[in-house]
Image (cartoon, rainbow, N blue to C red):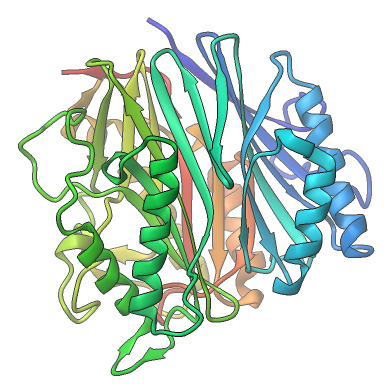
Length: 423
C-alpha cells in the first residue's frame, strides 16, 4: 500500500523547530512541506518577506527564496498555483510584471488577493508545486492550468474578477461564477467537476441594501449552483443530496470580488470524492436564515481518495459550534476553537463516519495553512496559538474581514492523509 509522507522543512531541506523561521537575520520567513506519494512529490511553500525595502526588493527576496526551495528538492518541481497576498492593491500590476520576468512562460496560475500580511510586509506568497515522471502540465487559457498524472486531471483556475463595471454584489458574483465556468470550459472541464472554491469579497460584512454583502454573495452562489450535481460519478454515496465543493468566503480590502477554484476530472472508477462535515457543527447549507436568507452552499471539507491516499481540502473554518459563534471578543479562545474544529473535521473517527475507513489526519498532517486575522492587534495571540498547536506546519497570516462581525479569525488548509481505504 502506497503511503503519503509529509515533512515540514526550511529552504535547505533541514527539519525546522517551531520557532526557526529563517536562515539569517532579515531573511524572509520561509516554510515548506514536502509530500511524497509514490512517484509524485508535492510541495507547499509559504514565503513572507520581513517587510524591509521597496516592493521590488521584497518581491525579489520572495522569488529568490522560492527558487532556492524549488532547486533544493530531490525531484524537480513545477509550480502550479501561487496566491499572492498584497498590502496595497495598487501593487498588483508591478508584481505581475516581476513574476512574468521571473517565470517567463512556465509560471504558475497567479491569484492576487488584497489582504495585508500580518507582519507588515508588502506581500506574502503561497506556492504549490508538483513533480514526478508522469506529471504533465497544460495551459489551455490564461490563468488556467491543468496537471495530469495517472489518469487524473486537476484544473486550476485563477484570476477571476467580475467584469461588471456597475452592479450590486449579487450581479457581480453571478458574473464571476460565469467567468469561472467559461475558463474551465476552455480546459474541457464542466463546472460540476469543481471540488474547491475561494471567494474573496471586499467589505464582506458591509451593508448591501437591507442585507450584508456576504449574504448577497451567498444568494448568487445558491442560484448559480441550483442545478449543478457536483462530483457525479465519483461520489462514495451517489444517492446523497446537498453535495457542494469545499470553499472559503473571506474578506479583502476594497469592494471587489476575486474568485478561483480547483476541479478534478478522471475516467477512472477507483477515484472518489467525499464531502466531509463536522459533527460539532451544523452543515452550512442548513444554517438558519438569520445568518443568510440563502444559506452558504459549501462543505466543511472535500476529500479526494485515490491510490491509497486522500487529499483533504479544509474549508474556511472559524469559532462556530453548531451554527453559533462562540468565545465572543476573545481571539485566543476563538483561535483554539477554530483549531479544535479542524482537528475534529479531519480526525480518524470523522473520516470513518464519512466512509473513508482506516485513516485519519492529525494537525501535523496539514501541509499548509492560511490564518485570516480580522484585527491586526490579535496577530501575536493567534500566531502563538497556531505555532503551539500546528508546530512546523507552513502558515501564512493575513489581515482580512471574516464573514460574521463577531468572528475574529478564520483558518483553512490542505491535509494529506497517509493511508486511505474505501469501504
